[in-house]
Length: 288
Ligand SMILES: Cc1cc2nc3c(=O)[nH]c(=O)nc-3n(C[C@H](O)[C@H](O)[C@H](O)COP(=O)(O)OP(=O)(O)OC[C@H]3O[C@@H](n4cnc5c(N)ncnc54)[C@H](O)[C@@H]3O)c2cc1C
Image (cartoon, rainbow, N blue to C red):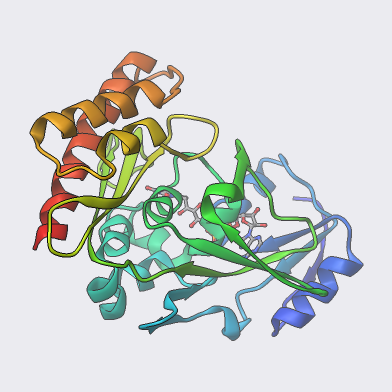
């Protein structure tokens, strides 16, 4: 690795000042994705800003009005083990349990995963299924970005070079909510070949779906919402036939590319199977 100027700021404000000062700076959190890129010299920033000592970025908080708020430095392991997340948003616990191995989960952070913006990442799809927002801060203030608008291309986000991702916000669902996360990978706890997250809300008093989000990972340049599939379910009382139709629509909407292990057609089939499973699980949970 080439020599770099290295900083360990203790506050968000300090980190933002450094991002302003150094044009060619890179944030490092857990380093799980960044260090391999540095080692292979795929990136050679002038300055490295290690944010691991910023304690104000490390929290999991729940509020009945605001919902769940997770600091960007929260590790996958903290998410997996958090009783608050388990009780308020078990899709995230479910997702974190199958993300990498325990060593990766102990060090990798949710903010780092989102900013790395690999379309196969598990947190991104799960958060899309939950309708999350993220908060970005720079020295002039902050802005809230809906997760659907955060990813722009392979490994690209809407985050500006002087911005720090600070928080993930998951609103409280209104009504009877059920969510599910399904993943297929070649090896257990490996990166996804396909992942699917679903969030369903049933209107109070009847079985009508008042809101549904279906998020697909690893089948396009960014994680995507399967909007055609969602439309097939919205405002309906859902049966098996509707679920199969929605799963087929999700498969049609996906744009996977063939790789060394799987053809694009095989991945489309996986989208259909996982979407169907996720919808069934989410509906069952919403009814409960
Ligand atoms: C062996 C292995 C297996 C894995 N398996 C999986 C898996 O099954 N599923 C899965 O989803 N992922 C998997 N990953 C990926 C990994 O979990 C994530 O990419 C990782 O959590 C990224 O977080 P980090 O804190 O290490 O980020 P870093 O590597 O430190 O940073 C990643 C990128 O984000 C930027 N960044 C980090 N934090 C911020 C911030 N707060 N604001 C602005 N920019 C920021 C950095 O500049 C960098 O560009 C695996 C990784 C490894 C090494």
